Length: 482
Image 1 (spheres, one colour):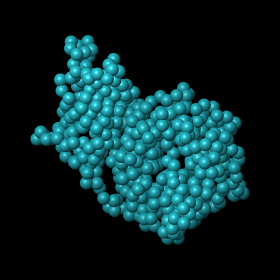
Image 2: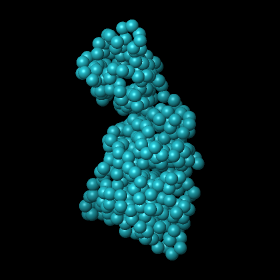
Image 3: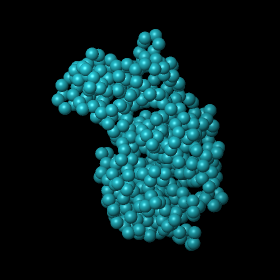
Image 4: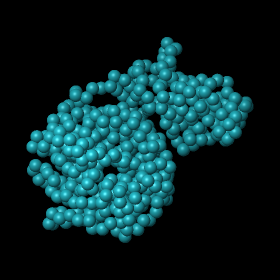
C-alpha cells in the first residue's frame, strides 16, 4: 500500500498541475544515456546459520570491513548492528545495505564489541573478537553485490566447544542467474531490488537501481520488470531472466511516479504520477510517452481490465475514480465517479465485472459494477462492505474468490468474502502492512512490511504467517516472475 501521504493545499496542487503538459503535447522522454550510471557500488550483507544452538548467543557488532589483497580494510558504512543468533532460526538476517568502492576484495571481517548470552547477559568466552571469511569478491560500480555469511556454530559434542565460542564464517556468493520462480521487491530506502527465490524463501540476489525505487510492474510475456523511481522520475526496464537493467528513461515533468500498471494486450504502461496529478500512457517497447492525461488531485493507483479494456485511476484528494477508455484515440477520461473518503487501493475481478476499492478515511470497501460501462457508459457503486478504518492495499484471490485487505492502523490483514460481505478471518502482523501480492502460482499471499524491512508469506489455507523474509530497507512494492 502507499504510505499515508500529506494532503497539501489546493493552491499548491494547482501550481504543480499547471506545469503538466496537455495531452496534445506529450512530454518527451529520453533514452538510457540520459540516466548516468552510478560511480559507486552497493553491497548487501545477509547472515544465516547452519543448525541450531541451545545457547541464545548475541553478537554486538561494531563494524564490518572488506579485506584487500594488500592487507588493508575498507569499512562497510552503517554496520553497527546486533545479531541475535535466534533470529537466524527463521532463515536469513539482513545486516547492512551500504555503498562501497568498486574493486577486488579477498574477504570480509566482522569486528564484535561483545558476544553474550541473551538469557543471562553474561559474556561468552571467545578467543577473538575479529571473525574473518576469505573469498574473492568482485564489486562493480553501478551494481549491487549480495554477500551471504554462513555461520557454522560449534558442535556441542566437540571437546571444549561449550567453553569457548568459536564459530566458523564462510561466504556464499550470489547466483547471477537464479532459476525457478522469483519474487521481486522494490526497497525504496536502500535503492535496490531484492530477488527472492520462492522455494528457498530468501533473497538470493539484489539489483542496484535508482535513488528511490518505489513501484514495480511485471510483463510476464516478455519477462520484463518495470521500475518507477519516486524521487528521480525515472522508469527502468529490467530483464527478469538475467536480472539485469536494460535501460532507463527520464520522463520530463514526472513528479512522484507511485504506480505502474501494465496493459499487456496493447503493449502499454500506465504511469501514475502522484505529484503532478497525471497519468502517462507509455509504450512498453520504447518507453516513450504516447499520451499525458490530467486526473484529479493525488492519483494513487490504477487497474486495467483485460476483459472490458478500460483503465481505472484512483485519486485520493477528492475521492474519485476516473475511467479511461483505451479504445479511444486520443486516449482520454471517459467518466468519473465519486467514491468514499481517501481511497487507497484497488483490485479487479474481471469474471464478475467488479472493482474493489479500499478507502483509508472510511470504514467501507466499495464494490463497483464495471459491466455497465460496456452497455450504457454508466458507473455506480454496487454495494459497500464494512471492514473498519485505515484500509490500504487490496488484492483479489481468483481461486478462493476472496479479497485480502491491508489494514494499516490495526496492523493486520483481513480476508473478506466480497459476495456475502462476511469478514472471514484476520491475521495479525508485527508492523503495518504495505503493498500486497497474491501469487497465483503458489496460491500464497505476500505482504510488505516497510517498517521492518521484510516481507511475510501467508498461507491462506492455514490462515497464518508461513515465512518471514528480510529484504532491503523500506520495501514498497512487490511483483512475481511466473
